[in-house]
Image 1: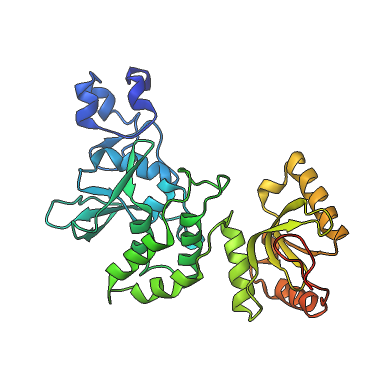
Image 2 (image 1 turned 90 degrees about the vertical axis):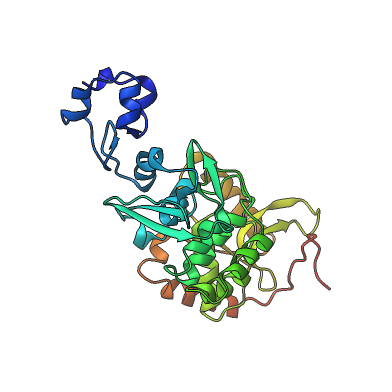
Length: 319
């Protein structure tokens, strides 16, 4: 029966009204061959992921409504806190003074018309990145807000899963939405997170690693630090994190490092780093789950024993 659907309806959620307008027989919409994730909506397959559920519900959004909360984060490709990733609800933000969706499996957050701002991403309307970040304040830890904030302000083209080129906002824009919160729920968390957000971060785990280091009482490392040959000045590569004075580099090895091409580049980079006297401390997800304590103890021991003259940003030795 699904072959009776127009091609334009097969890849997304659609309303019953829309299907009838395109000539879909009423029996096809009633016979159970299609999924009904929300009242008035049909899909070819039952949505399973946050983005699929958001896409299924999207046809019901009115102009003053947009995907919000974790649905907005997933649609934008921003990091969703792992503890929220299995949520089954769709989250919507709606301007006050207008109607809002009331359906099972839908969570609605109402905000003032002045604060409402939405972006279009692949045909889906989601809260703008700064607003999406601010709306998570009452539910996220400061650590989680920093991870999301880093992803928003990063200019890295290779930031995992992000669906728009970055940066999606500036630190000033995050400051502005923070000030708009005033004394409301979560405002203190936004204020605590904002000064810890850093530009140029290339993955959520890089943020995690930096925050683990700082929260353990160790010096904050540089982010995406350029490393030059002290003799020729040639750029040897960038370190995920770097304690320049101790000549220690911290690198997170995620799934993107598994390809042969990336593996070869990493080996060459680490060889060059070692040649000029840098010590590379590598980490994988297993070093951080369930706790980064052991990895941090190892890193602290390395930092305590490194006392070589630091490299300056231009590649020359510091006098």
